[in-house]
Image 1: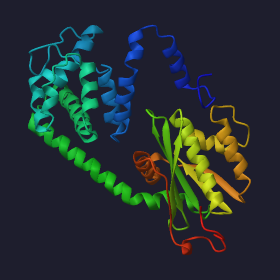
Image 2 (image 1 turned 90 degrees about the vertical axis):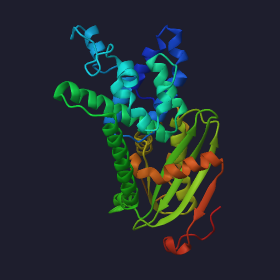
Image 3 (image 1 turned 120 degrees about the vertical axis):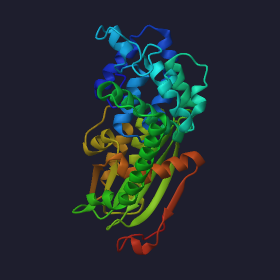
Image 4 (image 1 turned 90 degrees about the horizontal axis):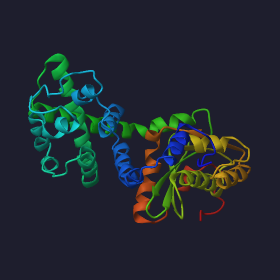
Length: 350
């Protein structure tokens, strides 16, 4: 109960704990929390940085103020400037060792804010910043915390100018790696086809939580990694990303049927959806009717396989889904008939 997948998990227990919370302020901050987490996880930062920002957000880092509160340390005075108690607000906002880095990263405006509380401040920064500014901000905070630890444990001093150069070089390195990875994606995603079906359809979804709309992004690949077709489908009155992902899987099976493929592999980055498609039994979850429809259509194929792939290898399908959701339009692009299996396409696609 309360879990759309029908399976009890750690997240299920977390939801139950949320339901017994009596503090009304807890529910008032849910929108800010969702916006913050949504932006943080979409920045595509290394896990070590994203998790550190999450810990900073909840004050789960061993500042001297926290250590003193836990009676691990007797003195909470900032070791770098000696001008105040070393808590998260002092480390990332008011310490003179910190004040120099934000202007050098073109983020001087975050230091000029009159917001007092740290939680409100970091939430405001995320809400008002672009994704690129948030990425610089997160990397800056991570390197600030790393620099603080080097000072305490290694007596190593890094200036604000040095840290700003480190941050910019690190972000440039991340972008370079991401560009290199994107050039390898077509070949890497098609390694799954070896020894399998000759056609693969990858699916992904984009979801608009404000207007309850989603789009399905579909990419059809032939043997040897040849792009055969792309399609986007707009859905309305979709309540959450979970059924949106299931609808995208259904659209992938429909597209394979329309293109009259005798066999194919359907691939998506939602492990739960892929597992449900593989198990040919009645699904009792919220998406049961969609899974039932997928199973019924599976009988039209000689060989239909469902396979999970990493989100990084499903980038193409995700991008066209996001673009279609922005424009609120459906597309269907097909390459020449020479790209399709012999004997197929007795009729033009709808």
